[in-house]
Amino acid sequence: MNPHQDLADKIRRARRMVILTGAGISTESGIPDFRSQKGLWTQDHSLMEVVSRSFFEKNPAAFWQAFKQIFQTESFHQYEPNEGHTFFAELEKSGKEVTIITQNIDGLHTKAGSNRVIEIHGTLNRHLCSKCAFEYDLNYVNEHELPKCTTCGIILKPNVVLYGEMVHHLDEAIHASTDADIFIALGTSLEVTPVNFIPLEAARANVDTALINREKTPFDSEFDIVIHDEIGRTVRRLQRLLE
Ligand code: NAD
Image 1 (cartoon, rainbow, N blue to C red):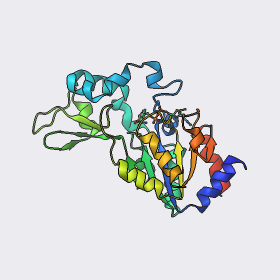
Image 2 (image 1 turned 45 degrees about the horizontal axis):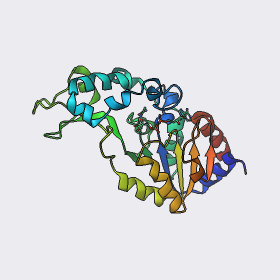
Image 3 (image 1 turned 180 degrees about the vertical axis):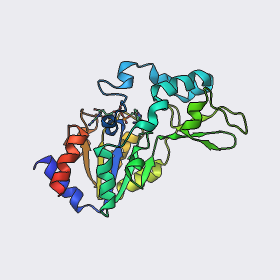
Image 4 (image 1 turned 90 degrees about the horizontal axis):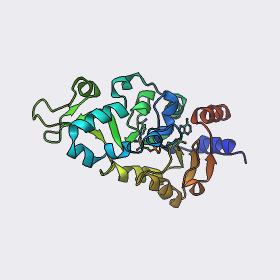
C-alpha cells in the first residue's frame, strides 16, 4: 500500500497519538538542525563540546557567549511554527489526544497551539538559578552578557539539557508512547540517546509506528511506515488524504 495512504488511514483511526519531533521539524521555520548536510554540527564539530555541562562548569562566560551565538538567541522570538507544527495542533483541535515529545528547545509546538508538549531536552525560554530555582526568560538572558540571578548572584544555566545531563520527563514520554494508538517520529536523525530508544519501546508495545525524515536513520527498519521526504510536503499530502 502507498505509505502516505496507509499513514493517513492510521491517523484517521487513532484516538491517542504520540509525535516525537527533532530539529528537522523546525528547519522549515528557518532554524538550522544539527546533523543534516547544512546542520550546525556538520559545519563545525567542536560545537558539540561547547554545549556540554562540563564546558558550562569550566568556563561559564565562554559558554554563554557561544551558546547565544549557536542558537541565535537575539532573533529567536522571530521564528514562527510551520505546517509541520500546525498539522498536529489541528489534529488535537479535531478531538484526538495528541502528545508531542520534542527534542527541540524552540517552543514552536506550543506556539502552534499544541497543549500536551513534553520538552524532553528543555526549552530556550527559561533559564534557572541553581540556588533559588527562580526562572528568567530569554529577554533577560539577551540583555545580560553573563546572565546572573538578581537575588543570589549565581550565573544562570539555560533550562536546556546539555551533553552530560539527564533528559527531562523520560518515564512520562515512554508511558505515553507505549499507550498510544500510533507513534510518529519526524525530523530526527535518531542519533541522540536515550530519545532514540523511545520508538523501540513503542514498537515493542505493538503500537503502529511511522517515521518521516528527509534522510535515513539508523532505526528505519524498526518502523512500520517510513517516508523519506520533507515534512511540509508530507503533511500537505496527509492533510489532503484526511479531508
Ligand atoms: P538532528 O539535527 O540530529 O537531525 C535532524 C534530522 O531532520 C536529519 O536527519 C534531517 O535529515 C531531518 N530534516 C531536516 N529538515 C527536514 C525537513 N524539512 N523535513 C524532513 N526531515 C528533515 O536533530 P535531532 O535528531 O533533533 O537531534 C539534535 C539535537 O539538537 C536535539 O537534541 C535538539 O534539542 C537539538 N536542536 C534543536 C533545535 C531546535 O530547537 N529547533 C535546533 C537544532 C538542534
